[in-house]
Length: 104
Image 1 (tube, rainbow, N blue to C red):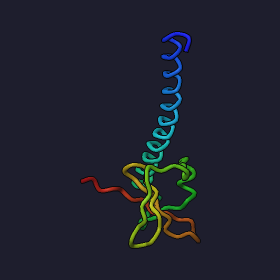
Image 2 (image 1 turned 180 degrees about the horizontal axis):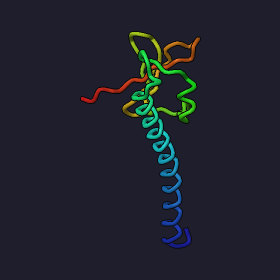
Image 3 (image 1 turned 90 degrees about the vertical axis):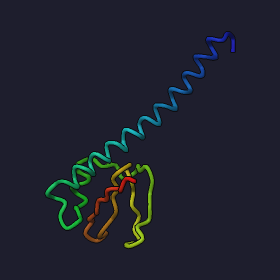
Image 4 (image 1 turned 30 degrees about the vertical axis):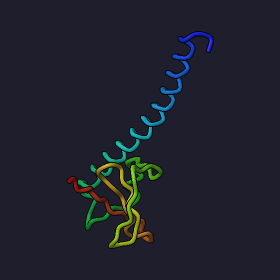
């Protein structure tokens, strides 16, 4: 680097790019979590299931999750967005169930 300020600017730019990527993902996860929380309390969530159309209408992003876990009872994958998760309940009818993670 020509001078120390060039090195500092370069490292700051690298850090900023990394933080923006992490921030976007975290923002999307929090948005998904709020959507699942809202849907779980809504009247459209009946008999432990909700239709895919309501989830899509709220803008849920199925492409992001904080982690995943296999449900040992149903053998289906739960995609978590921090404290709330979503699992396919009936693929034929496109219904899902919403889970709330127990805090220890």
